[in-house]
Image 1 (spheres, rainbow, N blue to C red):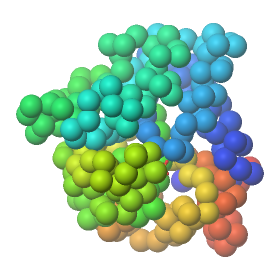
Image 2 (image 1 turned 120 degrees about the vertical axis):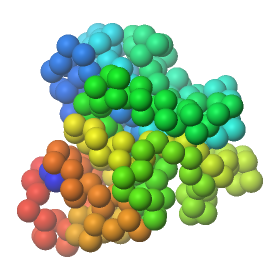
Image 3 (image 1 turned 180 degrees about the horizontal axis):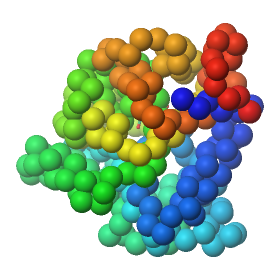
Length: 251
Ligand SMILES: O=P(O)(O)OC[C@H]1O[C@](O)(CO)[C@@H](O)[C@@H]1O
């Protein structure tokens, strides 16, 4: 894993923006996997600014989001459909029919999961998957204990995840308890992965990911087995001892 350390969240977001732009510009068609949550918000803002200033086009880009809550409509401000429109899609020139997010309101949710994986396969897979890191090591909404070979599936969120995400809702009781998420098996099929990590509250999780065993109880640990992972993390997220122990490139 290539680890890039940055001074702070802003710097992490700038490095991530440049990383994503370089990749997008390197191919005539590009499949980008997107994450939600707090971590990538400034990266998305930077992409918008770049689009406005440098006119970087997204006409050749197709996106696949990692996950969506079950039971929230696209117009609900806490749905990931709403999040993506607000934070990225409506500000860039990506065609609406090239942005895909699991439908948490599908009448047949099991079929929705199967169809989502099929759709990704039909597009010949994801070129670059952006990920955030949950406190308990979740990636997407794959909670501890999720089998590593799982494809897109329905999950019941861990209490700690509901608590962590309650900050986006009026009350913790409003946080849905279920979601559709790309599985770890689906995520691992991505040709390249970019993991963004920021903040002291993530440093234990990042330390475990960098130095712990590959263990289903810590979903992100599977990234150790992927051939092409870059982690961009700020100083708060990387412990001093991680910097000493790791052979990775710190910039
Ligand atoms: O970026 P945050 O808000 O810390 O969240 C980390 C991860 O947790 C999730 O929000 C799911 O709980 C993911 O979407 C995200 O990648």
